[in-house]
Length: 323
Image 1 (cartoon, rainbow, N blue to C red):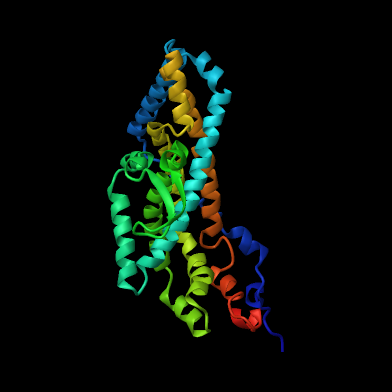
Image 2: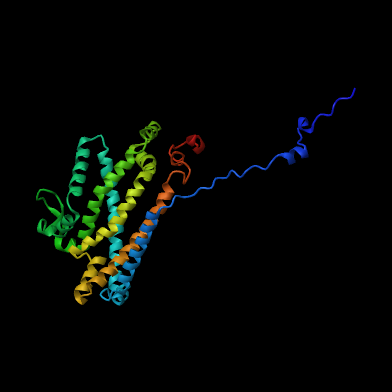
């Protein structure tokens, strides 16, 4: 018996005639046409014209004395003041961080006395102007002519110094900047510590870790993601805040610039020299801040909790601790 020949389509094939008979499909890709926005282009044009006019005015203005700016930009006196500014910034931030961490831990303590002391410290030094604090530290000799170490309440003194010899402009600036910065860093660190899940601290306590170990190995490493951005802002702000030291003759960049323009009367030129160096310093600090933020940003590295926990438990295998 002869069976009729089944079409190729039934066998899973596609006849050539059928394929050729299918009409070509139309192009269904979307062609998006942006809505014209003349207002945006007008704003861009106006901004470009203003920037060009401002640059031209600054460059050709004969009163700016760019030759004086170029002469003093790398002058030895300016560079020495720049070094003092960098030293003040680094030392003040280091001391401010140490004070801030201590005060933040006191604020989160179970002791009401420690909490009250820390709260009074942040309240006072955040509530009074930094300029007033700098002038106060510089004139500390008016309140304490002699600084001594010994038995309190008019007891015998082991060693003494004249305040005028100890509290120089640099020391007064360092005291004022670091103590004031410590009050702000305390709030930043406190917010970072409170952002960590309390279960992390409970886990550390359950395996026998002390409060110091929990703070240094669990809480602070995880709080860095919250602490780093405002810390970077505070560091950049400190670079510029050091200019206030000029009121107490702290020998910083602003101080030496003032001394120079009081001698040659090139006020604007010397201010431009100082401003350009401040821009260089803040730019470098901003680049460093972005690099550190990327390092601690989510997804930039393996989960911080697992990396921390692998080094926490003494006497256990790291793989078991991480699991």
